[in-house]
Length: 294
Ligand SMILES: O=P(O)(O)O[C@H]1O[C@H](CO)[C@@H](O)[C@H]1O
Ligand SMILES: Nc1nc2[nH]cnc2c(=O)[nH]1
Image (tube, rainbow, N blue to C red; front, side, top):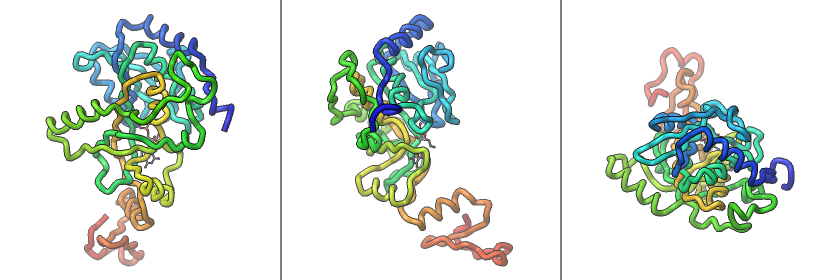
């Protein structure tokens, strides 16, 4: 893959212009940037003394097209730290180049940010991770990246980082430990565990064979974002912390796929036993057998 969507066409000046505009519009000087995943935009509401900008008003900024991504950049204070929060991120499947998808990360660097917190909604492939759990990302598999779709493609900008950046410790071990300790202190440790996130291109969800493959490769949760942002962040020397909110299980067999369907379509009056789904015939629906009603 080369050229087109797969080559970074932004130059240092493009990021600098956006950063300078933001610095001229707000007095906040953030140390921490937070990228809110799908449905997680409310994290920004916790910021005090907010200055908020719609992406449409920020020179050079890409535009959000996905539901659940408000498309606002919110500056403010959180527990004594100055933060900037992206209410809505950019995904490759929206048609953005990876360069545009990750544009804000370099702008954050130029704003003076030192730590990037990435959050996302993800599907679980691991037995022990259920919807509602939080996975602290300990590492990632960047499937588009392995295939050559990388936000760092194109001439390297040495002002941001080296041509061949190491990715062996993307997710800061100190911050991961701190997060686990806080989860214990808050009494929610049973909902939190570490795992490996895989980024795929989307927008379709995985086939059963794809989910099985990733499971065998050691992936715990899968989504369609995050890894490109982290690659760019690590390249320019940001400290990264990442969490996935588990929103669903990815089926690893046709039977579990059917159970997922049943759970989604509870109103369709199907029932299943603990062993395999049972689909009622028309004439049984009025008086269904009493086994685990869906
Ligand atoms: O990764 P975030 O932005 O949280 O969104 C996740 O949720 C969407 C699918 O429901 C996909 O965009 C996937 O990547
Ligand atoms: N690829 C992918 N992305 C997701 N985002 C939220 N859930 C999922 C999932 O199951 N698969």
